[in-house]
Length: 378
Image 1 (cartoon, one colour):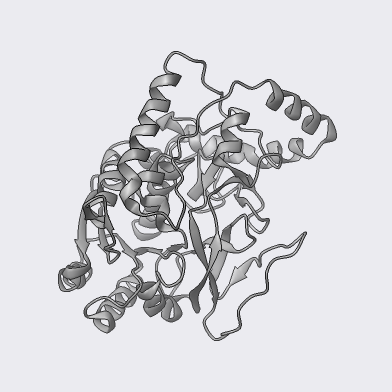
Image 2 (image 1 turned 30 degrees about the vertical axis):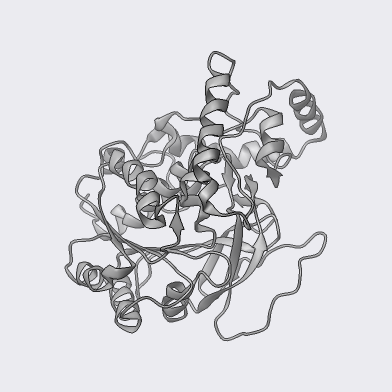
C-alpha cells in the first residue's frame, strides 16, 4: 500500500487491507481544508472547552528517571483505566488538524481526544498476513524492571503483529549471528533493527547482511533514539539512505496529522498513519542528517519547517522540536521499502499505550511487506 491509492481497492487488495481505513485516509485532504476555516477553528475550540476529561493512555516518565519506576507507573495507569470505566469516551477525533498538534499527553487528556480502537481502521486486516515473516534484532539491552528491555518490548509489539497474522522472531544483542543467518535465509519479508549505544557483535557483517536484505526488495524498519542510541542504525543508513542519526532533542509530546514538515505533525496522506489522528513522538529523540554533513543543525526558530527530504529519506513526521522524527523510502530499483523512526521509546511498555503506538507499528509492517510491489499476482 503506497501513499497514493485508487478510490477502490482491487479484489487482491481487499484480502489484505481494510477498506474502511483506506476510505478514511482518502477523505483526509478534504477534512484538512475544512480545518483551516475560521468558523471551524472557533467551533472546535468550543468543543474542546466542553469535552469530557480523559486520562491519558500514556504514562510518561522523566528521561533522567530510572526505568525501575515502570511497575509503579503501570499500576497508576491501571488505576486510571479503572476510574474511567463506565464514563463516556471521546469520539474519533477526525477533525483535529491543525488545532491540537504538539500537545503533551496531559494536555490532550484534558481535551478529551484519542484514537479510535476500531480494528477496521488499521491498515491491515486481522489474520491476513499469515504468509509473512518478521525478524527483529533488538540490540538495546538496558536493564528495565529486572529484565532486559528487549524481553519487555516483545510483550508489546509481538502480540500486535501476530494479531495481523505475522510470524515474528526476535533476536537479542548476543544473537547477532542468528539474526544474520535469518536475513540470509530468504524466509523473512521485514526486518527490524533496534539500535544500542555501541556497535553490536559482528557489526560489520550485520550491516552487510542488512544491506543485502534491502537489495532483495525486502522491508526494513530501523529504530534509533537519543544520542548515542543509534549505533547499528549508523552502520546501515549511510549505505542505503545517505543519512545518519544524530542529536538528542526533547519529546514527550503528541503529534497530530497534517503537514509532515510542520513541527508536531505527521503526513495526513501516508498509509503509515492509517486510522491515526494522534501519535506519540517519543521521550528524547534523535533525527536524521545528511551522512556527508557533520554540521549540527541550528535550533529551530518560530515558523520553522523541516526539510521534505533528508538524503534519500522522505520526511513523514516532524517532532514538536522541529526535527524529522519519521522518514521513509519507497521501493526502487536498488532496494525495498524502508522506515526510519528516531524515537524507539514508542516501543517501551511504559509508553506503548500512548497515542497511536500499536496501530503505527503494525501499519509500518503492513506497508513494508509491500504486497503489490513484491507479489504482483497477489
